Structure formats: C-alpha cells, structure tokens
Length: 188
Image (cartoon, rainbow, N blue to C red; front, side, top):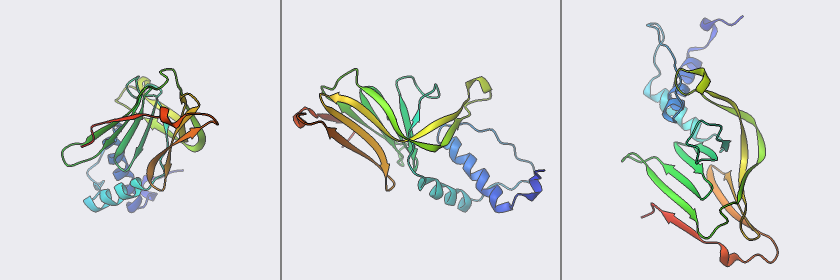
C-alpha cells in the first residue's frame, strides 16, 4: 500500500517542481498544498527545469488540446514547436516574453500530408482545466514528423537530435531542389 510519508522529501520537491514546469508549459495541473508540505525551493525548481530541458524531443499529435490549425507539437527546454499544414512555428523564451519565428513553405503543395514516424514508448497527458471531459490523456509520442511530397518529390522531416530541433529535405531521384523555398517571419 502506498503511503505519502514513504515518499522521500527530495522526490516530493522534484514532483512539485515538475508540476510547476508542466503548468508553465501550458498544461494546467491542480495540486494542493498543506501546511506541512514544503514548497520547492528556487534551486529545486531550477534543477527540475534543467533536467526537463535535457529530455529528448517528442512530437505529439493534436487531439484537441491545441488550436485546430496545429497538427503536431513538440516542447523542449522552454521552447515550443508547432506544425501546421502551411508552416512550422517556433516559440522561444526570452526576457521580453518570447520570440516567435515562422518557417513558411513557399509554393508548397497545400495538400501535403503530415505524418508521424518513429513511435516512442512515452505518452503525454494534457490536463487542461478542472473538467475531465477537456483532458487529453495517453497521447502517443513520436521521434519524427514528415511533410510528404511538400514539393514534387521532396519530403521535409523534423526530428530532435542532440538537444536541438533539426530538419532535412529528402529528394526522390529527379526531384528539383530549386523548388525548395522557405520564408522566415519574425527573424531579425
């Protein structure tokens, strides 16, 4: 039988800090504190954020937890990556509240399929608000997403690698790399 008293104090700090991170990432988690439950220290929160930043990047399908335009989302180290039919949107933290960079696919196939590949073992839960009907649980995670036939004979693959978001183009024989045109919005 599980006893809350059996949980080491350091694990309690980690758990409470993890709740803080998930809430900061846009996921609302309700947790009660009693008078005898210590709040995590600033150092514990900082350590948890650092540990969270080293987690491998995973792509999560949008099952209603996000705006319907977004097909997939990935989060890493405080940054968010959102993938729509026509662009990839990158949100980076900054002291001024955040920087948003949009990567548009100029002249691309508007009907290009966005698919996930390389299934991972972990799942993600979005517990948004107090109404369980709005919660999204056990969402699968993936190591890559691919825009298939974004331009004739050209796929675009996004993946996490060495703590960074990477993308590459895969060209079929005879595909023209001159068709690849990207537009950056938000860059200085």
